[in-house]
Image 1 (spheres, each protein chain N blue to C red):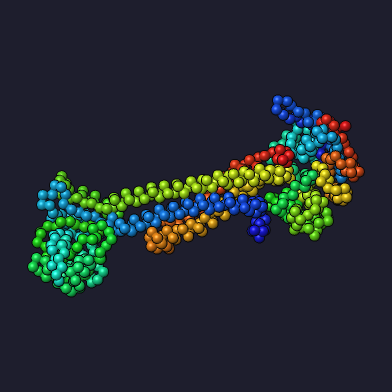
Image 2 (cartoon, each protein chain N blue to C red):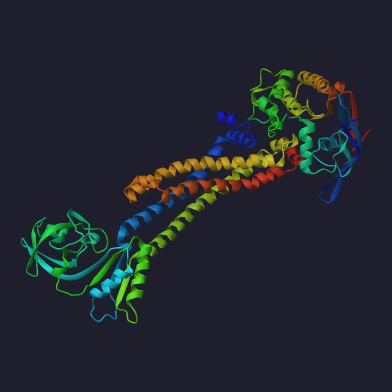
Length: 220
Length: 379
C-alpha cells in the first residue's frame, strides 16, 4: 500500500478577481523504500503539490491519503500532529535555526514532546550522516553540505514514513550534491521510507527510482 | 547565557525564547531598558509617596489619638464640673481621663520674664514627656516646666517657681515637641494649686485614632441631652483627611509612573512584532516540522515575559537604591524602605512589568502562531 496518495487533487487560489487553478486533478503515489522525483517547469504547480503532500495545505477538491488515512479535510491542529509524527521536511536553503547546535537542530521537531527523549537518536542520525564530530557546532560553523545533512537528520528524527524534499541540492555544488543524494538513498533503505523530491536538477533523476513530470497542474 | 539555555532545555518554550533573545542582545537590552525605566518610575514615585505618608503620620504622632472635651456653646459656666468629669469617666472605661484646669501667669526668675500658660493636672504622665526629672501619674506637689522657658529663666531641677504667692519646686522639664502648640511656655502644677472649682478641659487618651473618634461621639451623646454643654473633638478626622489626601497623591504618582511602563510595553510590542516578522520563515519551518500553534505561542510569550522579568529585576534593584536614598532624605532612616508600606511598590513594579510585557507579547505571539506555514515558508 502506498504511504502517500493524491487522488484527483485540485487546488484553486483566488488571486485578486481571478481564480488560479494550480493543480488540475493530480494523481500521485509514493511507496515505502522508493525515491520519487517530481520535475516540471516553474509555475507548473510543483510547490503547490509539495504543500499538499506535506500537509501544509489542503486541496480544494480530491483526496490526500497518508498511510491509508484521508487527511484532506483535517483541521490545522490535526495536520500539525500528522506532520510531526509522519512527515520529514528538507528545504533548499536548509532552514536550520542559527542559535541551536547541530544536535539541538535535529532534536527540534521532538523538542516539545516531553514523553520521548530523542537525544540519542539525534546523535545516532548525525553519526550516520557523517557528522559525529560536529554535534555541538552551530549552523554558521558548518558547510552547506554539512548543514543539509543536519537538515536530513532533523527530517528523520521522528521516524517519519515519508520525507519531502524541495530542491535539496539546489544550493550545493555537484560533488556535495552527489554525496547528499547517496546518503538520502541509503537512509531511504535503512529507514524504509518514501522520499519525494521536487527539483529542476537532472542529477536527482539519476538517483530516483521513479520520476514524474508535472506540467500545467497535471501529472504526465 | 548558554548555561541558562542548557538548564532550560527540558522547558522547550523557555529555552527557545532565551536563545532567541540572545540572538540580538542590543535589541533585547534596549527593550528591557524601557521596562527598567518604567519600573523605576513606578516604584520610586510609589515609595516617595510612602515616605511622605510615613513622615506625615510621624508628625501628627499621638495627637490624633487624643479626645479633647471642652465646654460646649450652651455651657453657661464655661467649664466642666466634677460631676461631668465623672460622667466622662463612666463613658470611657479603659483609657486615661485627664481633667485640666487652666490659667496663665508671668514668671519672673533670675532677671528673666516669661509669660506661660498654667495647667493644673493630676495625671501629668499621660500628657507630658519630660527630658529631665519626672512627670508623675499623681502630681500632688512641685511643678513641671517646659525646657525653653527653664532655659530662659535659668532654672533647673529642684529650683523654685512662684505662682499665686506659693513656691513650687521644678520636678521635671517638659520636652519641647515639634507638634502643634509645642512652642509656647508651659507651667504644670497640681490641680489644687489653681483656684477654679471646675475644669477647663478634659483630655482622654484613646488607644488609636478610630477609638478616639468613637469615644468623642459617645461622650457627646452621654453628656449633651438637649443642650450642647460639652464639645468633644479629636484630630483623628484631620489625620484621616491628610491620609486620604496623601493616598490620592500616591495614586497620582503611581499613575504617572505607570505611563512610562505603558510606553515600555509599546516598545516591547514593537520589538516583538519586528522580531517575529523577521523570523517568519523560521517560524514557518517550526510549524512545518510539527511544532504546534500553542507551542509557538508559548515560545514567543516566553520571550516577552523574559524581557519583562529581566527589565523588572534590574528595575527593582535600581529602585531599591532610589528608595534607600529617598527614605534617608525624607525620613532620615533608609532601612524603612524595606517595610511593606514601601517595599510593596517594588513588588508592584515588578509584577506590573511582567504583566505589561506579557500583554504586549500576546498579539505578536498570536500572529506568529496563526500564520499559515504555507505562507510563512514562502517568506
